[in-house]
Length: 207
Image (cartoon, rainbow, N blue to C red):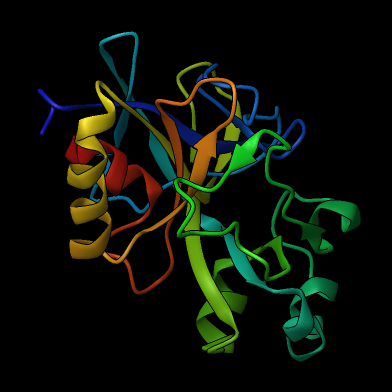
């Protein structure tokens, strides 16, 4: 599939601001999360054609949930994850780019309201809540910074004709195409859940 599609961004959540990634479209914000890992030596992402290896952290997790389900998870937000402040442990709204648009006239942008938070891995394991739509670990980057892994990743198709290939990939791996960038119309934003074949990093590395 690499001949057809180019993966550009995985949505890393840097401890600095919780939403950082490869410097791809403006949808990437410094300080946010991204991906599901498969072993220390096998955990990596691509940047400028180079594999960047990551060291998994086992003590905290990024979680995604519907904002309407926040009350059922409130106990998780009061227990601080290791190395996080109270503000980081509290829930934050998921904000998509204002340039995101439907992929065609038959589709619409997601209407549901989602939030995310950082919690300890122990709390996640103990909660076992169906309200948690997606969870992914934190990593240590090569420069020593800590980053979490969100549910989002970005794909650039080489041609509009390849959109069908992307749609097939999404269907086969239970990934949702949220929309495309209105200014760079070959760029698509995709979203994972715990039902997906892997987290955002796993899915990005398939290409």
